Length: 81
Length: 382
Image (cartoon, rainbow over all chains, first blue to last red; front, side, top):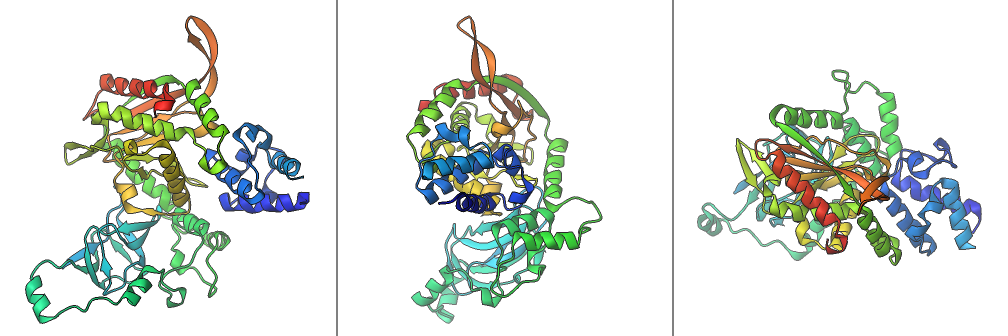
């Protein structure tokens, strides 16, 4: 799984939740939830979808490592390799 | 024989557009079945039938916008001169094959239903775009981008007011609320440390789709407090307050790009927290996809509005008529707090109540908020 694959998957899942905001519109290093205007249930839905897609646990205790688009991609990279 | 009418889905609705005839003529319908889907300012609303019988004919065509109270279909309920009718003109029982077909969604090729993505439907509802009037590519659903492009091409859809349909609906309901309901407001600081820790502990061992969020506990605590303070749970109509008996708590749900809807979670006391969480996820998903049930809009008996974790300290709600109260909870944050004579850091949130002075007062309102606080201190019991 390459970084591109992960970002592609992330883009797809985010588009389901926030179809009105595209990846080009956001700052990938800023707060993910602010950038995509997603609330706690949207975020839970995103984590649910990613955990299913990649077969990961993504525990709540790790949410702090998923706070921006880049950090979330880093997190997935680290747990998938 | 009876008529199925365009329902009123709230104080703010004057007309609706029929977008689906879910039961074909000649087919049976039971109380509680979805008989039609109506497009309103709030999205596509599934309408349940309140009678059982057979749909004999549709009186309004798909895509037609008609005022509240207009007969949409005729239903043969088997009452009124049934013996005579049955004797003179027996109705053949529907064949099983036809029944199966009736349960399936109508095929696209009939043009009976506009195929559109949830995001497209939502944007259209918010902006007051008639989705059935948009150009379609056969076999292709209308997408968010199509509606956005339509809006860009026609920016002056409502030059009279400059307000979107959703904004007009909110304005109408809230103006009525502020005109008719003598609101009073209370505020109370609540320590959510125990709750926060309990949720973290429960969620630690769970897969994401089984994790809980704080609103489930706010809802459960409210429902339990309402058992003791029933004057905040019910409807005030025609000068009379009718207590509801069960707590159907409306949950204020923000829609992307603006606007909100507050559909009900039914009989919250009767749901275990995991069940309630599943229902809440389902409801929020359907609302944001722009499609939910009529009774979820009309049967809420009190509302909860939670600012979540990206909001501010507190809010003062506007009551949604004919309800008589709305509970608000702000964004929890670490604050200095005194416990057993020591200043410590605790997770604090501001709990508020806006209630109708015609049915309650500040004294009882305060006790109601304190009861919610007390229950939130024992999250394991909720």
